Image 1: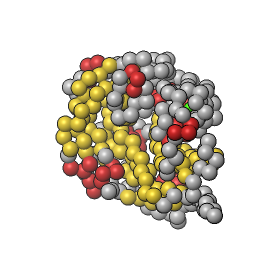
Image 2: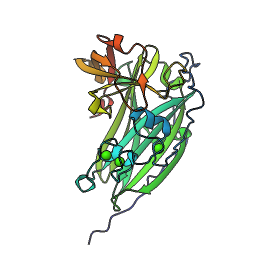
Image 3: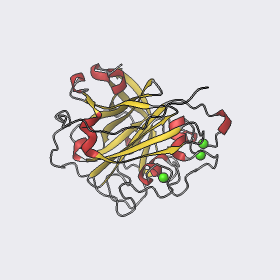
Image 4: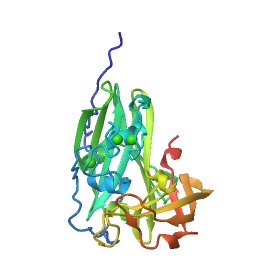
Length: 299
Ligand SMILES: [Ca+2]
Ligand SMILES: [Ca+2]
Ligand SMILES: [Ca+2]
């Protein structure tokens, strides 16, 4: 009989590891503006594990843990590859070791949420970082370098009772992310013995720090890529829940250092739930964005 081995995601700091690979914390010059009192760091109103600020950007309902009422909560759907806005058949969900990483900013802080779904173990967790300055900046650093930023962690059962979901949050000064035009951050781990990774790509658009996504959730609206301002409400304090630009991003060049040049070949804002259009969205057609595929840099 198979006895699953259970090992918690142990977040233990090695002694005083150097953090020199983290960018120096320059003065905050780019001016991420808090979007009012709508969002707070760490707020998860419906308790599904996804912070409110992430939910408005994904188009999921921040006050309903299961936006599409299919029995899988929104956070678990992001991990198992379901669509949190379209009912999925529970019996057809294929549970596999997986990681998920996402981030948002409120005021001067960037919150990084990372999660793993596992049946046996999560080991060898690492965060990896790359900037536009070249491939040698894809420093591979131990988890310990991030430990000063860890704000919390949790473990809960998945809908499939032999699986569990590990989550953690880290909080960084926004200035850490403001000094590069484009960068990428990834989490790597061995989950149930398999090496898995998940990355987020960041780029500036119209002076707003944005996350480049090729998986905009509400693809029923025709989106197949686009950007979210990292801060809900976008760069301007509009009083609106969030801003988004649904773009068709066409890779036009694969550059050294894992960099991918995309051209925006179409851009518009349709009715992504809870979001409004990023100012300048339609005029971003023919713009180029540089994304960095950090996972390609590290095999
Ligand atoms: Ca939530
Ligand atoms: Ca659901
Ligand atoms: Ca679903």
